[in-house]
Image (cartoon, rainbow, N blue to C red; front, side, top):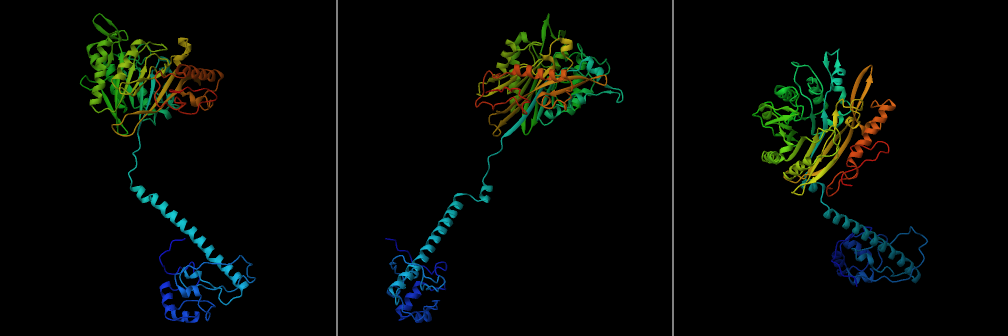
Length: 547
């Protein structure tokens, strides 16, 4: 049995003509209206062509009764457009008995036909109600755009992109070929034309300045005592460098005054200096703010063996003034110097550093693997909470590793980034790996201030110094091999020898990095191709940290 519903006013969707509500209809019947004409006159209801006919018994009995429809399925009326009886009352009174005064066959046909109309309409209405109801429920379940806009969204992660490269050197041959008579100056900008797109977008681009700017008081020179024109600093700044370390074994090639002037020239060109300072009272610890993040920076160089009681750098005695300007450590006295280094790391944290990057001039020249002393230093720096370590001095590329830290994090160490720009070539040294370099690109990410950092990306771009003759003059270009091997003509690889040497350089560097060069994989592992910044040229395989 269907549950009885409350009386409602007539629905204009179900009833086709103007209707009266059931209360008015019932009152008219009780007042004595016994035919449709009287009922129409009493209530004003539109009754179509049924005026003068007796009121159906079911309606006369009760204006809100629910009569049952009876009859068999019969043939449709021949005239489908014949006038249909109009219902008289509200939604319930649409279901009265229209069989009065008709023959059995007519009653059957008319009744069956009329039965179909309210059933179809009821089904249509039920479907519409369900759709409307579901729409309302969906609208309630889903917040409006205005309410969504009012809800606080999760803050975007903080990201810092740091790029580091190897040794920046100017040998004697480079000095000769970079003199431009028409400009009456040494010009170096063209060396960086292909690598600038990797340096300029970075938040911090760091390089090792393995030369000095001693000025014109002394002759410009290359190895073994470097003195480079100031225009080299200008070219480095225009290429996109933000930070240069001056702590290396050639820092005193032009004496203490040369070391001091080098710091001043670098700063004059808008770059930060680490590993050295112009005055003893300056703080050697540098904090540089990028993207709202304070990055702490330290630079150190190894010292050579003692000469009696004196300390030496590159075999030359270090005067006391040099010890006050340069940041150095003694590989033979790590028990004394490591605590001093880790204390400076702690001081960087106390000064507000949120990321700490250490640049180290260390290791064995032309060595392919880190030494035991280097590993000991790296472990101490990781324990102190350092985030990134970039190494220089061997002049060849060494592998990249991730070392564990006591706090559960990881410290990335690139043991040696090789040469960035130099004239150390097979023709002079009988080794090809000194022509190679590595550009490291590390993207650090965290969910907000005070949250732990994670490696969002670790990328390495193998580099090769392309030296080639143009109009009788040697030209130098630093080539990102991932691009150059994919478009040889655009990068000047227009001879069979240059193409072979470029591909050989790529293969040498990738063999050093190798699959699984991370001795301690991070979790979750980095994506496959973590060493890729761009698609791999040709079919050359690319290893990744944390495969």
